[in-house]
Image (cartoon, rainbow, N blue to C red; front, side, top):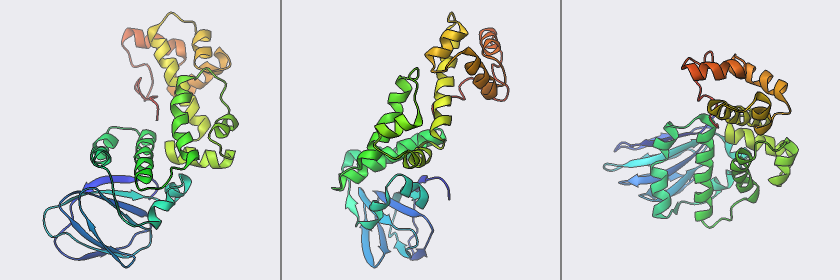
Length: 261
């Protein structure tokens, strides 16, 4: 497993056992699930968030109708975002508002791209982590706060070192956490954000390619055009003309494919 999986599941009325090489969190939504893991018996009802650490043999039984939000989380993903501590603790009850938010997580994630899925999930886990009485980890919170800041200031000459410093992280650690959260390296993510913004400016029309390039954070129009053609297969000028005429502005991609990951 390389990426997190989040889905609502129903468990059968018979004793089953399981063991897997990824971490798991179970959030009770409806009914009840009896779960035994690491020698502890847990009664998973609505609002109970119950951890199952990777490698632990666990047994479960659901006497009656039930519905459980199950989060299958790769070890590397949890390690990169410093969520391993969630699996060293006992089950705890979450506030109803957070449970309701988790209940809609599956539907929301189905509509999101890979990077946005990781961001939304990480944010919910951060809230669940803090709700259990554990202080949130500042570097991870800083990383979650950084993304909208960068999107709002794309003309700024961002460097990976600058972004890492803002998150109080070493550059290598920052890059690892960033990729776990977005699915892309910081540089690749930043280029996508800038190209997406450039597309919006090109749709409006009127601005020169140099103005669009500088407003989107590219050093000059030549750098912008090269990056744009690599992503879209056409030049910015051709893309703008095709957009205006109602044609397909990108070969093999639609015009919204550069939405923020």
